[in-house]
Image 1 (tube, chains in turn purple, brown):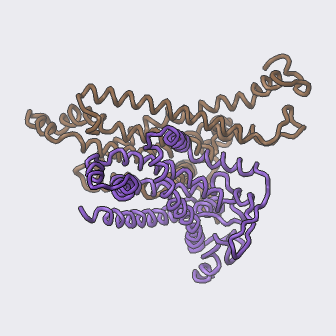
Image 2: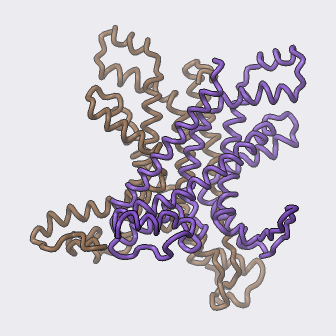
Image 3: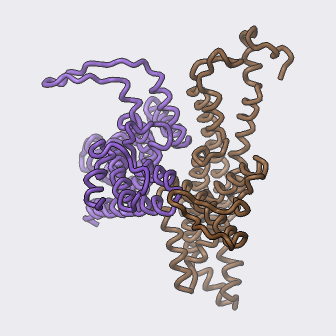
Length: 263
Length: 287
């Protein structure tokens, strides 16, 4: 079987498109590269959505944490402490178990043009359940980074903005938030890399890979088990992760330059 | 444990709980908390050794050694730690068995890799298949600890490398001016001064290390996660202590354990930092 044929069969296997059965005997190098690469789809999906949603939520939590009102900063501090103080691995287990115990019901959601039934069963599936865990986790870590940056925003800038007659809301949006991002960006880049690496845990901890649709590590460990040769699949997945990590550094570097272009 | 536990079926309330929580399996669960501390105690010294070796290699004047140090410290930034945890134990295991096979069974004609199998002669098995079970478990734990040490050693090397560079240059030059050799400057000035710069990074690393310990479960070690799943799972009436799915409760206990550990460590490092910065007359703002 040629490598092109293999790609057609397994290129989108992680999405459930193509050949149903995974290769079992006479596993070729091409099959390993293609399947592990197709699994990267899930890693990118989890990392991208969790980062985007987490960024918005973390900004809010960081402002809450920095607030002088106890009703705001106390819950924010507790949220950050619990999610940063416990292992992500356990959070996966814990939240999965919680979702499994939820009663299986469906809610009808009217979006105006279509009716969709939202089911609690979805929470036990990786695409939603694991996304929620990763989202909460990255929100807590990012909020802590942003909170540290908020505390280092120069007082002079805020006073100057007040003297200009800006309202507190304007100051938050135009002065504090951009300066916070500028200060936090290098650490935030690290957090993005860590989150991307953490996505490898999804199918490895508790969320079952439905119909063998898994992430890159799911397929890599599948091959390591089948061939009993760790020296091929793990270096392949390592190369994939290194490539995407470099991409993250590149993209974040681009934003870093945009944030600091006036300097 | 207690005498009234002989027939669990007739127990109720407090007595049931006191018997349930002291079964042999629960005792195993409690001792498995020690596995976490054993892993930490076993890996921290190796991590520091690897960290120093990596940092010194990166600062070496010999270029290939420098490149090696750079590769070692950069690889953990590009590849998830879980992949190392899965790869290192099995790779080490096969590597050791391969070497032993070469030495002990040199007359063996068949290839070692036969299709999807890895076959070595019986004498090369590590540990030997006749060894008692605890040898196998200890060997597995040792390989897992080594995987942890390699990954976190690379993180530590990054931190130590940065901290060595952060020691004010004027001090090193003054020492050189006093006639100290390169080695003396390193040992007497740079190394003792480095700690205060390395502490924030190392304390952060300790936090990450604590949070990585439940991954031991994935490496087949019978740690707290293993026992929590084992004990929490649904027990039908065939068992002495039947109960529904209690895994959530057991995981909550683990969660509290880790939160406590994180909290204690945080307080400890805060105190230590205060001490170090006070002793040196540094303000915390310079950190």
